[in-house]
Each structure stands twice: as structure tokens, then as C-alpha cells.
Amino acid sequence: MKNKKRELSLQLYEKYTAIVNRKVEITLKDNSTLIGMLIGYFKHDDDATEMHINSWHVVDEHDEETLEIDIFGSSVGIVIKQKKIAEIYFFEDDTSMTFK
Image 1 (cartoon, rainbow, N blue to C red):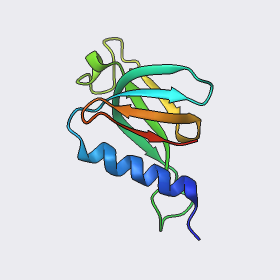
Image 2 (image 1 turned 135 degrees about the vertical axis):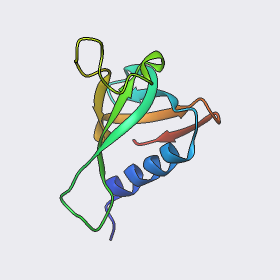
Image 3 (image 1 turned 120 degrees about the vertical axis):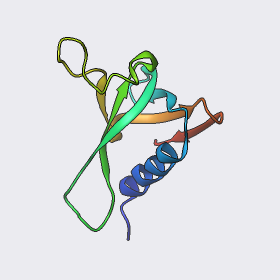
Image 4 (image 1 turned 180 degrees about the vertical axis):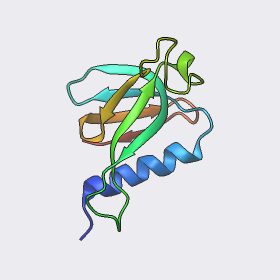
């Protein structure tokens, strides 16, 4: 039986790669929210036969083109663990994915 967490991260990955406008509103399980752009992800490599996204790299929408580094050489944005995400709203097509 497939792990539900792996299936949800794969669904989010498929959505993420299919959209042009990556602006999203992320609601975390602690009910905090942030608006930004998904610009990358980190795979968990405990099982090479299946895709499993462990974390997502999110930046402010104005930082999307920064190549992930600010003018001081520091990483831009934040990394959010997949397991902490409750819901993601996609501005491009007015849809949401729930991960509760």
C-alpha cells in the first residue's frame, strides 16, 4: 500500500510543475499563513522507487528571479516541511489542495 504522505507530495509536485504562476497562499497546521512563490523542493531519498517531497522552498513573489540568493550571498525565502502544510491555495487557477 502506498504511503498517503508520498501521494500528497507527488500531487503537489505535479500541480507545481504544471502551473506558470507559482504564487500561492500557504496555510500551515499552526494556522499561520504566508503568500509567496514555490521555487523549489527537496526530495527525501529514503525510498528511491517513489517520489517523496520532504520540503518546499518558498520566496516572496518579488524574489522569484533572485536565483535563491540575496545580495549578501544568503539564501532567500524559507523552507517549509511538507508535513507542516495544511492547505495551499493557487492563485493561477483559484484552486486549493488540502493536506490535513
